[in-house]
Image (cartoon, rainbow, N blue to C red; front, top):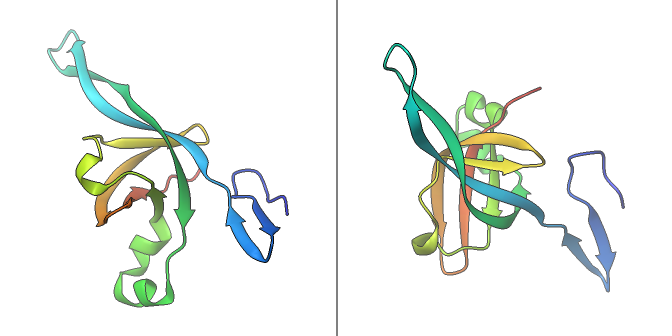
Length: 120
């Protein structure tokens, strides 16, 4: 079944529900210089290209977390072990850069990345 633009595509195959992984880029903020007022100027540098998929909030998480958190943040699962996850501040999915707020260990195979969700 084809979803709206930006949604994961779900396909039924052999009785299983497969969720499409989306390409994404992990980004690190690096200082590239200073402006005329001696304020640092930053840019985002690509650290690693990986794949990720969105993970919805569970009812339990919604009950525990404040509504502002579940309303303004998203979670993505990435197939990189926590101890190998690179140091980065942003993730870019579907051309949208999102700031990482939390990185959660789902060892041994995955890491969960929580990001601020920006509405455009």
